[in-house]
Length: 135
Image (tube, rainbow, N blue to C red; front, side, top):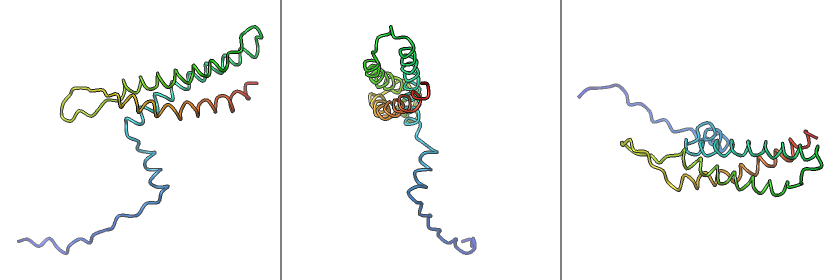
C-alpha cells in the first residue's frame, strides 16, 4: 500500500447566481439552438429589408399600391416556413458512433419555435425604429 500523502479536502461547488447561469448559457448555446436562431434571424432580416424598401418606395411614389399589411402577413409566413425549413436542413440528430446523417421533423419544429419571437422582434425593430429614421 502506498501513501499518497494527506487526503485532498472536498471543495464544494460555488453556487452561481441566476444571472451568472444565464450569461454562461448565452455564451455557450447548444449548436442546434444557435443554428435555428441564426437561420431565422437571417431570413427575418432579409425580409425586413425588403419590407422597408417597399415602404420607402411607396412613400416616394404614390402610384404604388398600399399593400403594406399584405406584405407584412406574407413576410411573417415566409419567415416561419423558410426558417423552419432551413433549420430542418441544417440541424441534424446526433448519430452516435456512425457517420450517417439523420434529420427529424423536430428540427423543423425547433426552427418554427425560434422563428416566432425572432419575426416579431425584427418586425418591431424594422417598423418602429428603422422606418421612422428613413422618413
